[in-house]
Length: 261
Image (tube, rainbow, N blue to C red):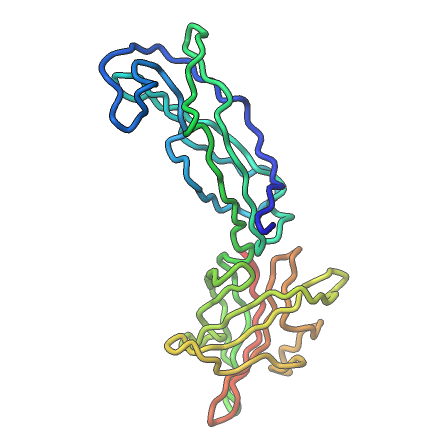
């Protein structure tokens, strides 16, 4: 089964206390047998979607519930929360159901819950955990020229559940880089990190214009203490990239440390 109902949604029974008057006729939308009655419904009873932030702790959300009487509508908001989203696979699909369990007037009288509009399904995709603004520090090298530094904020935008895209190859903004986080691990300074597939592309065509160096390649005067490259550190939320793009004057070199802001 593709959809997995494994998330915990925690909220108290939806109980509404309202003072209402029964007047006028119910609109044609409602079945005749509820005419003259007060009843509770979830307004959008089709499939809904809420993108969960992959963060530690509770991710709260709310949804509208409607109390309908013969002279109009009264609204109330039910609050819920999902927790543990940071442990979920952003490429998986999750879903839960939300239902009204009871509704009462201020005097304690039960309110009828419309049978065909008491529940709805909530799709819970996990937001790409790598999409954010990053502080980019590094450089670009054009062989035969001075090293060109970069120190800037760059936005990593979502392409899919495990891939982001940023504008800029070092200080050169004409090319983008797509970065796919893989499940292959590498230990860097005692931390288990994930190797990435970083591909410089021409944003105008979407075609690859380069690739990743297999070993550290860069300015010898700025050689890093750890030569591991092209990986993501989930603890420091840092991408370390060492890539190239083709040029008739010699492949351009980029080395960057991108730290989430």
